[in-house]
Structures are given as structure tokens and as C-alpha cells.
Length: 488
Image (cartoon, rainbow, N blue to C red):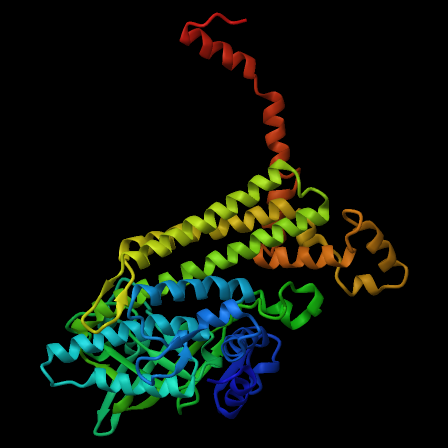
């Protein structure tokens, strides 16, 4: 297994094509927009190679391979038991709590790998030996495990008019498709958009994004190519949050080491794929199961991951409340407890899907579908509530704090430091650092969202007004009258 330094060396040895904000970039590891995502992926290698770095995470991230009989990254593991699912669930939560950033360059692969493992097995059995997709995929996965490669699962097509199937699109390339079959392999065109961590992984593992019909055979294709294969082009996303990594000082970012979700658009421009790397080629009937299975696996991983994110939000909320001198207030404690309830409810749904898992004939164990879909729905609301709660606990300082450059202005910086003091005994700079982390974790980095929570008094102030202004005596008298009780 590789360590983090070796991972970086392999990344630099590749000739991957990547554009960021209109410019070609070759040194991904040092680019300010890419560096946090590279660090997050590098951490998966460091944690696996060094048991002392974090013994708990090391235990989760290293697994035994059924293919190589050696130790491998759990991100490359074929899930063959409930215990495998539980270990992956624990890894996702702990890993997010460790980095607070996206490691999608490895995470998404687990969903695609296990879905393809089971579906290629089913296809070969149904064809009665006419296809050998499963054996191809087994050899491919053995290679990935032996080399400890980061595999980026690529799913989302451009799609064009969402009301139309692929074969009815005005541009046939709006879904990845086979444009030519040759004796040596296939040629594909198309794009996979917003793929997490794609440029910083070694391999691109591509599958259809939707169940297909009989007229969509050309789009029923699954394959793998190296990230620097001829015709593979990456264009980084242009989220507004990129700007702070480009323009701001490290101290002003909040989780500058890992806290950046990186994604890219992958363009496949007449890319040749040799047959040994083709795992689906025209079998449209297999796509329904493929899409369903990888979707459930990815919902499993992402829901467990967000439990760790809420854990971080609880910790940041508790810290900023302490620095502000209000940690012991009942209203703050209730907010932290509410976040904890959300995290454990979500985790329970994920665990339930693992406990109710079913085994396929291929050996892959699938999470129970209804409970993991319920988890994903619950996750959506829980993450938004956590962000709003952090804004509520932390206050306006999350976005109105001065910058680290302001603090260096002669005399003015001293005054700013004086007036941003919190509880006695807390370093002002620690308070500002935690405020920055709270802002980053909240996802509410624009003034309108946080100020809407805080401006004109935080929600606790409005609740106080209800306590002062509601006529509780009147309402009690009305209830006692209905119950036949004489009012005192």
C-alpha cells in the first residue's frame, strides 16, 4: 500500500489534463484550489500506511482483499458482508470527522465498484458464457488493489433535455456513448459532469447515469481509463467558494488544509478503451440494476459521511459558544443536543440499511434500499439544520470578523484585537479561527444567510419575546374551564 508521499509522486508522474479558471494546470498538489482536495485524498494514504497516525481510522481504512490475499484500502474493497458495510459506514463518519473535506476521489468508487461487480456477474450468467465482463472486471480490480490506486467513480452525464432519453437528444454526445467498435476496443464520446475528486485520482471508472431502453444500446457502456488517457480532459468547477482559496490568507479560510469540495467536468473526446477495460457494451437491460445498486451504495457512503460532518459542527458550535462565554446556557446546550440527535438518527438509518442488507449471487452485499433512501432524505435536512444552528450559536462574527491582514495594521490591529475579545482566558485569535471554521462548516458563507439568522437579534431573542408577551394565564384559565376546574 502507498503512503501519502508516494501517492503525490504517482499523481505528479501522470500527464492528466486539467483546466482551472481558463488556465492549464499541471502541479495539482500546490494549486490553491486543488490543494485541500489533494490533502484529503493524501490523508487516506497516510492513515492506511501509518497505524500510529490515527489507530481508530487505520483499523477502519485497511481491509483484507479477497483478490490479492493482502491488505488493501477499504475504498477498493468488494463488500461481501454486513460487517463490511458497517466498517465502511464507520470509516466514512470517522474520515469526515478527521478532515472535514471531501475525499470523493476515492469515496464514490466504492459505489461503482460494488455495483459493477454484481452486475457484471449477473450479465455473464445471463449470457451463458457469451460475455466475460466479470472476469475482466475482476482482473481490473486486482490491478487496482495491487497498485493501491485511487479510482474515481464517474456517473453524471450532461443529459441535455431531461425529458428525453439519450437516443432522442439533439446532440448524441449528451450522454457518454460508444461511437465505434474495433477489434481492439471501443471509442467513446461524451462528458461526465461535476465528478468529485476526478483529476486527483489515478483511474476513471465510468458507468451510465440512468436506466436505459432498447434504443439506447450505444449508451449502455461501462469502462475504465487512466486519468491521463488520450482524449480525457478535465475542467475544474467554478464554485464561488473557490475564490477564497485563491485570494484569502490561510488563516481566513477555515479548514484551509482540507475544507474544499473539488469537482471537475470530464470530457471524453474520442477516447479509445481497450476491450479488457470494457465492462458493459450495449447491454441496456443491465443498466436498471446497475444504477439502482450504485445509487444505494453511494447514498450509504454519503449519509454516513455527513454524520461526521455534523459531529464537527457540534464540536465547532460548542467551542465558539465557550469562547463567547455562553457554553452553559440552556438554549445553546439544546441546540447542540438537537444536532447530536440529527447525527445519531441519520447514523441509525445507515446502520439499519446495513443490518437489513441482502447478499447477491455475486457475493456483493447490498444495503437495504428503503432505509438508505430514507437516510439520504433525512441527511438533506439535517445538514441544513446544522448550518443554521452554527450560525445561531456563533453569531455575526462568523462573517463580520476582521481579516488576518487587518489585525496586522499598526495600532488598528491592536484595537481590533481588543474589541474582538470573548470570554476571559480565551485567545482572541483562537476565537476568530473558530469563527472561520464555523462559517466554513455552516455552508452559509454569504452575508444574507447568516445575517438573516442573526440580524435584529438571534432566534433566542424572538423566543424571549414570545415568553414575555404570550398571555399564559389567559390560556391556562381557558383550559381549566374546559376541564371543569375552578381557577384559583
